[in-house]
Image 1 (tube, rainbow, N blue to C red):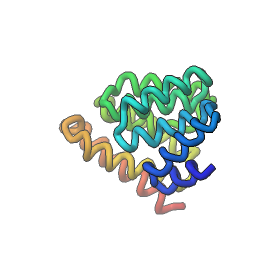
Image 2: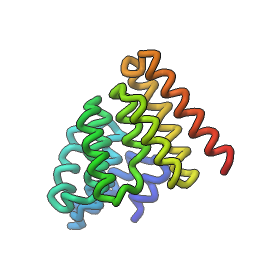
Image 3: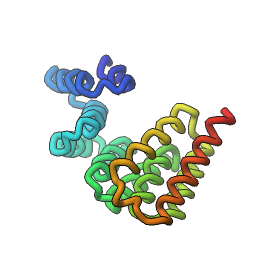
Image 4: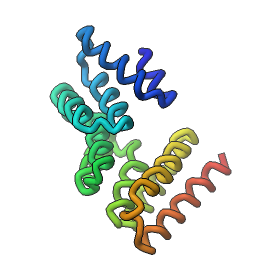
Length: 173
């Protein structure tokens, strides 16, 4: 599907158009709504993303991507406890695979530094380099956007420690 390719290229506007066209053609499976929710979160179209998360949940309530997209939405809205709960559900639904970096970021922004470090550490044991690179970009982007959340010395130290671990991991791969 063209939307998936555009999503991978960070071309969120055109990806949203493609996913919307797929829905209009009757392709209303949970995966399309999950992908469109992801694009809409990136575009900061949060109410539309919420509607897509609701549609995805109707079609695949226990799917890890459904939980993950809800987590992404809560994270973007600064609802860290709700994001943490959703990412934990995503991990449970995915047999403890993936989602560790997302969970770590939510924990970090919630000020739960030790848990955040542990989640990132767990993510490093299974993630390919591309996911580690994405986690590093997300860490930098989110901590810039949520500067007030990362204002404490402990959180700043945790951010630096996590960044160093991610960068060290990448230098070994």
